Length: 370
Image 1 (cartoon, helix red, strand yellow):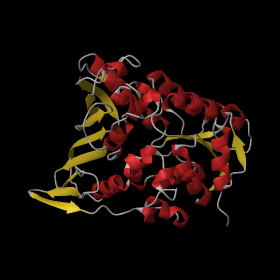
Image 2 (image 1 turned 60 degrees about the vertical axis):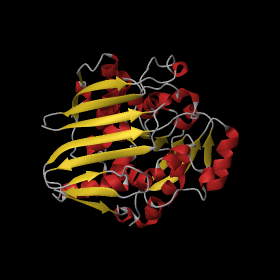
Image 3 (image 1 turned 90 degrees about the horizontal axis):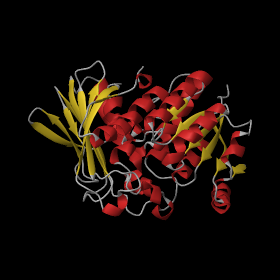
């Protein structure tokens, strides 16, 4: 019996091109179309991967009746507008992080998903990284015992990135550290309190009106005794790139490595042990398992900067594509769905609001709660 296939279009071919061969080789996908404003780059990528339909206009792409779903990988300020347009055009949506840049945009996406009955998934890499899957396995097997506290950080130097990143409030791009602390136990954030610290270069401040070098947020989980702390930096902070999370349990605790390519640590009481994180390709269809351990392209010269800095995003890309397609095939909700994505994204947006108000408690809006 043949497996159902969904016609996929990828929008944005920087980071987005990483996903083309994954969809091409997935048993439930037909990699039908790509979209890029730069026609030369559009055709370079299209010719390299043999993509039959190519668009320089997102609006024209949405008029193609054969496209079932769009995977959006454009600059962050375009995510909400394009997600909404795609949903209203009858397309399922997978969108890279963050979901949106305002609470109101998140609300509109949640409401539009409810109105249309279509599928939305925010493609948060860390919650499908091998490190997260390893800790999730410990949690599901009861090896951590009772989880007592979670901590995550995403520290990065964005100098040299496209201009729209300059001066961005750190917590406006916080999903890589908010996502894993909520996803491990399936929790939702109830309210946040955040402090800003330090100061970025003066010429970076005016674009967003955000002065802070680092923002550190406490998240109180909804209907739970748990809280988490997340830290984010983007400019003027000396630190090797790090996406990390730590989990403290009554039986075992997990701490992410301090330095890239070293081993993480599992604590059992007073006995720490360095651990080799295994790969989780076995969870995927055979056809795309190899993408967990290697990039799409043959050399780092062709790979997107986020992929290089993030050490391949922990092998998450095929897991993300598979989760989205599996949700479509089985008519189920992916993780994170629209409501969960809004909760994760709004934590960061509201955390920055809290920081600008000296750490004031801010509640998550009802539409972000199940």
